[in-house]
Image (cartoon, rainbow, N blue to C red):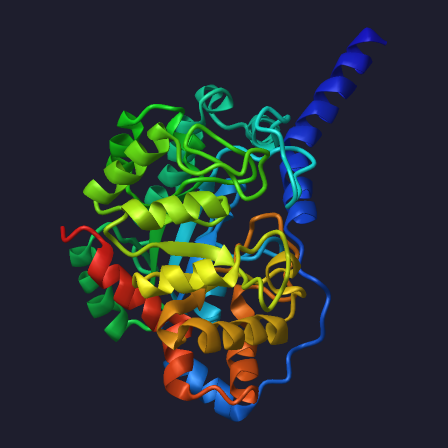
Length: 386
């Protein structure tokens, strides 16, 4: 009987190890049920000619080989190709409080990512180090670039980007990827880790996620404060290395401080506009205008807290609002796919956004800019040269 009990326990444990990560992924990254989108012939033709880029997806947080197509989650290489996506920024999530909300979160709140690291069998060093979690996810991007050279390459410089554009000109399904952080708590409080992450291929760094950290206040934290002395040091170090600075999730006071000391344009990698969707997830429109005036980009997300719904139409309406507010040259896409959101479509269905933009009467040139050319132009000007 004891042997049977032990065998049963082992079988149950193996079943849990193999199936629990998949179940968590399915539960955390659903797509709302919807019929096939009715897309015009004009939209289909235009979409095929677009250069599309997305500033934010957390896809490497999950146990998936992105060279393969999945029935769960939002992003993989086959679906990026089907959606005609050329560039995808892969962001690394290193801490997320349980019970996270857009109002207030304690910095010390229990951490979802520790549990996720354990059940997904990440290396033990990632269980206690946020920097190691970021590097572990970045290594997945490196591995993808090594193992799927016919479909994907990692971009770390302007030279890489030019090489990618040449390759894509003869292979329209070729996808380029970049690596960014979701919050600079990933530095583990050590300024030298900015260089360490740069050396690991990180070319965009955000300052905050759902809680205050050593750099300053989060939009969803407690203090609402601006940059700390350490935060200012990090911003200057990020600029020195030509890393793109992302202020999504940062408090409005942090954004103001960044705009004061930064000499380079910045990005809000996944957001909405408060004037379009008055959500605690979105900073005020005046700040968005200030970001645009300094040459920055505002990338629109695909979920309800950003655009007050999760449909292609709601995303297009947020984009339309942004074009009227800051101009077509300062609006981009920032899905937050695989970031525990519930969008109404996945990356294979992006033509539905193109259709809705046309329905709103937005001209082709503006659509081209928003859907990806703004991202391309920004990267060509702000990535390290080599």
